[in-house]
Image (cartoon, rainbow, N blue to C red):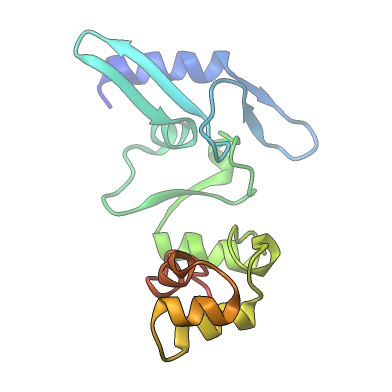
Length: 155
């Protein structure tokens, strides 16, 4: 971020965040994306700066996020912008945290179509997607997505 961007982002963070006494989180009160992560959009002469609020908070305190790393929450609160709750980490560390804490958004807890065993069967069974889908009573596109690891990534 440029110095001007840093000043503008810091101002927006100050205006649109609120401390939460019980958890120590600082909650973003501005716009969020569909997953609940805060979004900061600042109009500049050169265009629009659009950045996740927690990433902006991290960068203001710790500097730029190293290439290839993400900003992870230790508190599991997507709207939290408290730098003390944020750290840089890999995508794998983020996934490992998610699984360890039981926050996966896919899988048996969230699927109305298949159990874990059925999804594993769809992944490993011989036959076409259409044949396996017919056996399980689901669409062939669901079986295809499972085989591409776009659904039920953790089996």
